[in-house]
Amino acid sequence: MEARRTASGSVAPAALDPTNLPVHIAIIMDGNGRWAASRGLSRAAGHQAGVDAARRTVRACDALGIRALTLFAFSTENWSRPTAEVDALMDLLGRAVRDEAQELMARGVRIQVSGDLTELDAALREQIEQIVALTQPNPGLVLNIAYNYGGRAEILQAVRAMAADLQAGRVTGEIDEDLLRRYLYTPDLPDPDLLIRTGGEQRISNFLLWQLAYTELYFCDVYWPDFSEADLTAALRSYQQRLRRYGGVKGT
Ligand code: FPP
Image 1 (spheres, helix red, strand yellow):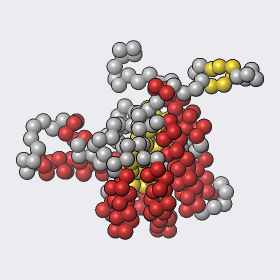
Image 2 (cartoon, rainbow, N blue to C red):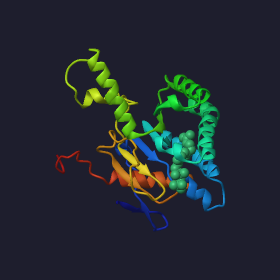
Image 3 (cartoon, rainbow, N blue to C red):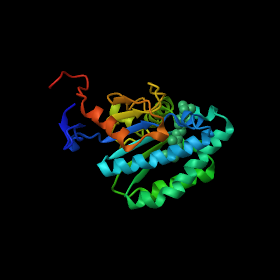
Image 4 (cartoon, protein in one colour):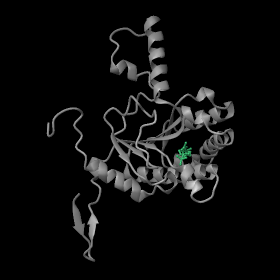
């Protein structure tokens, strides 16, 4: 990493290169439970603090001019958690949609959702659909919330829908990557350039299995509620040191 000397003589890390920022960042926001336990708080309080970290991250990405941010907020596997925790997570999403709508509109943020909303409570689903519709014309950051999301489930529903369309003659021609992609939850979003996972684990956990094929991975130990703008900058600095080759040869 390039370093420069500050006026006081200490070495400061190089500033981020604004021409080499990821277009799309995806985040596995892990560590809410451990953050809460380390403070003697409930897991729900950890998730609430996680919403605050999500808000800070949206603001920071918006300020940097990042085009898209995907946040993994509830996985298809999270239903197996205690009912009280599942309820708290659902409540949090409803509350976040209500409380954040004004700021998101003011920032021109466009909300999208990746996941199967049919399994959610009808009122919550309607609330989500409303904010998606309301923010649809916005020109700014695309905030994609992965909710009741599973990577294998996404690919499976895409294959089923594609097969049905092929069988009915609604689509014709080659089955190729471009065709399959059209059936994914958010076909218009570019694949993430950078995946960040907080909380110390180093795995993908069924997240964006198709889309992460060439994504740069960044793991950090900080629990999600503590994730700060400085942590985001550290992830971006790491990203800017990577040479992305997409299976090719260095320098070509
Ligand atoms: C993983 O931490 C986190 C989740 C399962 C939920 C993430 C949800 C939020 C941050 C709040 C909702 C956000 C939005 C944008 C509405 P964990 O509970 O598995 O933590 P642990 O590994 O320490 O137990």
